[in-house]
Image (cartoon, rainbow, N blue to C red; front, side):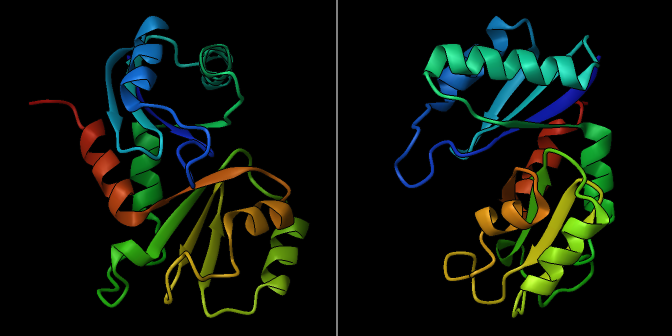
Length: 182
């Protein structure tokens, strides 16, 4: 059994594409996934699966989601081991001045190539701090995400991939939910 977190893109944002978390949980259970827990309205679902094929699992979830809710939502899947590595390699670790509510991880659908990363870094003038490591972009928003010009859509456009962001506090809560019960 593999434990995963599914991170849905673009649901329950700004009053658009409303999806209740109990319905999202039920969708995962209907797919035969186990230990399903939905966490906060931004579309985070923790579950275990005997199927460890990430691409096939992602496709099954996205297809069933579209059937159930009438619109497509990209899903970023990460295993518990991958989420642990994402947390461990955060460039903002051990920086107490950078509160979790101002740090975000953008989970990307694919690893951006070097040219795309360079394009984003050249187009970005700050004050945010940005690091791209593998399939994640780590961003510190000193003035908050809402006022930043470094929006998710801007990052996606420059990196030529889609993604979904979660603040650091949410990432740490997901990590706790991924831990096996003792």
